[in-house]
Image 1 (cartoon, rainbow, N blue to C red):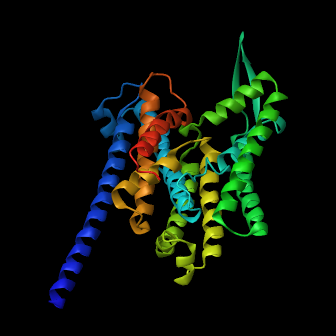
Image 2: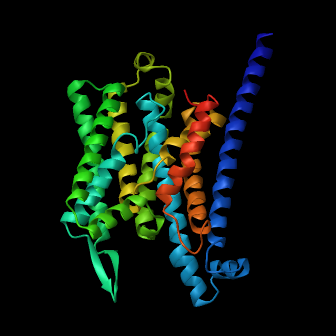
Length: 357
């Protein structure tokens, strides 16, 4: 009798594991499909045959330019940025015990926007170029903007961690500090724009729109590398995150170094999300919505929730980029505005359905 019960338990666990892996494989298939779709759509009118020929090493020079210099870098940026933002949101929601935690709700994105605005207005990274009777806006030093945006994003987290260390490392303190610093950086960015001229204001606003076209393959590789390192750290602590789901007291009783885990996880999340935002601009809702969507299928088991969130975030970013390029082609919509426009109703729907509590 006892042997039969153990066998049933073992079989149930095997089915549980297979189901989770099937979900992850399905998400990987969705991401692959989105990448294929992203390569095949656009305003250039390339046929599927021309795209396949180009991917296999042939094709016309114009086809090679469009596929390898325009579309592939956007796909690489979408995948790497989506992974970074979704994983950071997933882990932040765990360690801060708040389902609304993400880089955009804790002030990281607002700090990055402040850094970018400072670089554009006061460090000369954005200027006006006269073209005949019209004027255009160009960014003279994108790396300067990226560095300042990164410093603004990571600086926000340093301030949050420092304040929480003084007041005691607790999730509520970190959340309240994030809200306060978010408001502070929004006000500071507004003041910078108030004293700037029209061209600088337009450049700052353009940066905050978000665009995958700003990150080349080298920048995407950096984001992906840091995301991969962060993924290994998160997976290494997967059981600690599972223990935290039962509360900090339970986790401490199981031997989890809760305070150190919270601080280190927040620092890693801030690093990858700050680098992502620094290169592509403000991207909202990906880090917030992707973990909740995956949680509906895999639950709160972080062995599967972390990789599932990464795959879902990448798929959402690539899908959003596809929509931004085809809705009013040949114009390209700002992806930051599109993710907010699509993410907010979906998030409200999940709240109404009781999937977020």
